[in-house]
Length: 206
Length: 206
DNA sequence: AGCAATTCGTAACATTTGTTACATGACAAA
DNA sequence: TTTGTCATGTAACAAATGTTACGAATTGCT
Image (cartoon, rainbow over all chains, first blue to last red):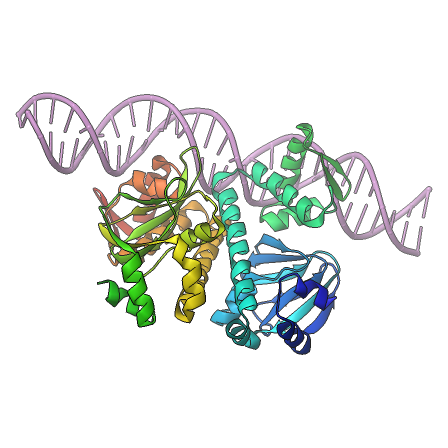
């Protein structure tokens, strides 16, 4: 499983071997905390299977979904935090049951120097997340909530690979950092516009 | 001038030499376009002197300030765009009269492979801008306009090194992607709270 | 069936932000 | 000084978003 996922990135076999040696497997259930960068030890999560969510949050409890982490991906936030030794207000939660290969941060620097493929990989991770953050900013500045909500639904469809999104209005409100009532109101509007259809605990994208 | 600025980053002397050979100086006046990533050729701007602003904008004309570029800094957006060959909706405008060393994008990849210090430098640029984008998202999601405006003023004070901000309400509105009337309203509020004092074309931070 | 908990719909209202219109004051050029 | 332009203040209103409250529908459990 690990070999298969790692080989996608064209890592040297020696690097793959090291990653196998040094990392460890973590299995989580949907909804579990994977990493809380405030308190836990610094590790890089490497998604072997499942789906994770990366949030930015405030001390007081408010939070907003930044992006999904799919199979084979890893988290630029974690890397940024590890390298800077900063404790940013980021946490990672499992969206589905997932398997994650955890790599202690102390090996990052070494591997970047030692393995060109790893250096390249980290660079690409930054590129990818940079793009996503730019899209996020775009939505936040230039879109109203209705558009932002719809983009969120499309994004979730993309990440889960399903036209049916099994979430409550409250959960969606949490991910967009707004209130349940507002989400209900806007979803109703989207439904009237025939962009979605709603069932209990489930939104279908048309 | 170039040598002095480049040496801050601990570049190898051979790299400095290459940068001197291949780049070229561009002088701009306050308000000038430095780069429009939609149309112009791909280059990396390296600020020798002055102050630049990096915007994200929409096709229809709306725009928002992402961050300032100070002396010795360069732009992660430009790099991301160059490497991806993407045309992101980014442009760079001079805040003050500035001198910029322009480096054609074709040398980026080469130098990253050839010079460890350059690879490291690019990596650090990403780190730095990542942080700024995270702060921007933080403000957009968790703050109201008044807070966002005040943070903007503090940020500008930081970048310019002056307690006096010589901008009109309209200019500020453009950078925050809102309207002049709203900015006037909120600045009045900040003035009543003794956080700033206002003069014509000038806001003083207290 | 009866009950409790969850989910969703909706109304009524408050607050924030955006828009339009116009008045006032400052400044510079003639 | 006079005139015209620009920057700011402010009112009145519109639209978007947030909040509180409550009722109806669904689900799961006993």
